[in-house]
Length: 573
Image (cartoon, rainbow, N blue to C red; front, top):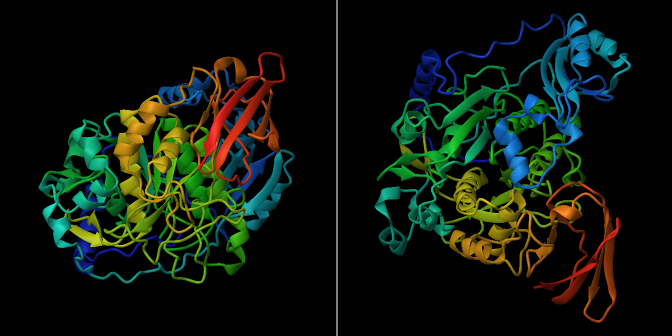
């Protein structure tokens, strides 16, 4: 992954290496007193990593009726709160298959994937051939080459301060330099109302978090035990306080909390720090790392994933994505993000910084349909030229929303505050606000949070593929949520209403487990579209809606198992 930002150079490179070394030697892990065991030594020969897909989950001792055997109580509660049933895809892979994979000489098992029914292994071509011959192995995808390439180093420049005089005077000094980016989206108002992310759990997927275990802006995270866990999915250990500082910068946008210096948009939330990015190479293995980290986050019961990562091209050009891949259903990370969203996690991902490049478009997993993709604007609300654009290759609007990513305030590994450019920073600024907003409206589902934020945004009635629905306003979203929330166990309803594009049904319990015939007409009776919804157990289900002209429409819901037919009205902007 090409890290989606151009960071401020806070210290000379020698000093930066010094801090990284101190963090490494300290070996601090705020989440655990013991380091996770490293994998065994790599097998000899030309070794690559591969994703091995299994045929089924035959013989598994796990069942969807006993999810406590493989999911945390918090993960189960998140699903229950949103009316989401535990699915067979949530079951761990077959222990028998895992044992047989590990028994093949020269094979090193790194991770297993519940959602994809797969395993990440390291082995040479001979061992891979033995794995492919197993009757329970369907296919294998090679994820990387054996040798690492030199890291991609982006030029880091000191960013000039461009705030206007009015912005300087309208400044709550408590927030330090982070005030404007938080206030732009209404996060300060949420904080003033008592919602600062308390009780919300956020997983940050990034490239490293040096300084988070030592410096003052992150002291409250440490002192209040709100750093819940750490894991490095690149090297399979818990050491995340070294390597690249990109994660430190993105975490600060949400979790830093030093009065009069820097306050992020979710300063009282709790965090899992997950290192998925290998800055020394660019291979599909990083998308697999993203998948495994997202499953980890799900199992831990997180509410939100904040990911300032994106994938388009790789060191081996033959593995590059094409624009056609950006449909939310092709790239490994995009498919993983979609499943994460289906478990009730709000996935927030940066759009990318390719707006000025030949690629131009968003990358994976920002193309996933249920992901809140964040573009960048400047302090005046104008789109950043570098911010990647939509649509997805199947025509959906992206990004969804935008926040400040031009000369954004960020914290360095040394604890100093500087400025940086990138959708990498717009993403966590917005993710932190979403956490505080969700705290204020705990009965919402993840997708309702996304919808209300879109409804609150600056161009909700006229979204485009440059900044999406625009800049959200948490105060406006709060009002919309209080007046128009479809409850998880209440009556049948349709939302958001009015709508500009996406449309969902909120189902009462008696309609969730039977097929539903849904028909949409205009007020003159002309058929607009219809679909059959399969039973899913879900409280909220998306509808396939064609492009509609402004006006009133009728949605008829007919239970196929018998029962009353319902007619709902909704307004298209």
